[in-house]
Length: 423
Image 1: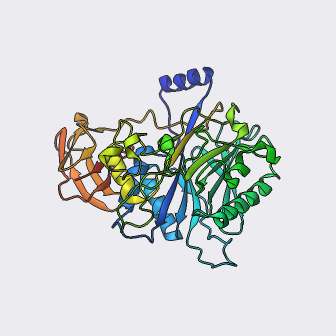
Image 2: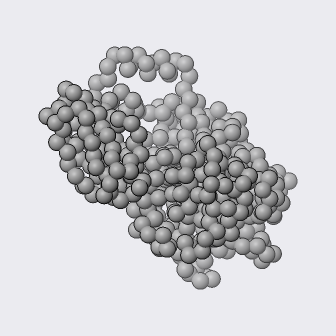
Image 3: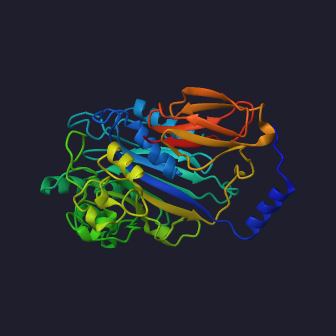
């Protein structure tokens, strides 16, 4: 069926195009802490859903994903937020086959398929864990004549201190740079992962950033926070581990004192107008850069601030011992397709969409006695149906489990209304 846009909408599109296109993309990398096998915290998925619904990344890169069941569970949750989300093919780690063949920690990429097209994926083997390489193309209007390619590499380097572990991390990054030496120097490359490095002078990190190594691809730290990160509160704004001091939740319990997680870009992306990182957009999601947070738990009052609420920090605390890192990219190209900006929902919240005992919804008066609302949880399970008989609907949420819920209708097509229950 062909959908017609109002004339004013078409005019707006032409005006925006004439002013010069610019599109931003939101990236997130997250160490998932042995998802879904780590079960010390019951129903961890609900906390991940809060995080994803709040940030809504266009590219979601993960490590410590255990199995295909976990991979599909996360994709289902993402598709409730945005049905355009897709994932690359889940692949088991192969690099440790000669050591232990545990294959319990994998990487994966999820992406907004309205903005990116997955062209290919490749495994880069090392002595310990694979690097996963995903080649993506921006879904632009002129992708056939001027394709913009971004190569996303997701990794998880060997953990722990000591010379042997540092040597293992160095060999892993050398395997990567050998692979990347076959690329063009003007490639757009995003490298995201849990590097497990303690300082920028560590050989593995220098292998990535030092131009004296004569590698084809050198990486930049978009945060521009090079230094000795371990136990150094000067760098608290880029700390990502540990969110906890309490034992029994899985993962590390060391408190907030390390920068292990990174999103880096190839040097070419510093000023490439077709695809570059946005200056000052690098953030550790959940980190309020509060100096009192050093060696504390991320959901404590010592870690409070204006950027990330207790609700968000508590979800992060319960889900993983790491915090996600985020970065924005931008392009001067025009994306293909028209967004849903012109479709108006017949319902809206009256007040906040954060509920404890009650959520209130305002309904367009013209739809009274016509509209039937359906309410789903994030697993796609139907919770209840609501016959609309007046313009104000109150939904009792006192018995709902904490998590994200969606309100929609089978009769009138509109973007689902999302609310969060937090008792």
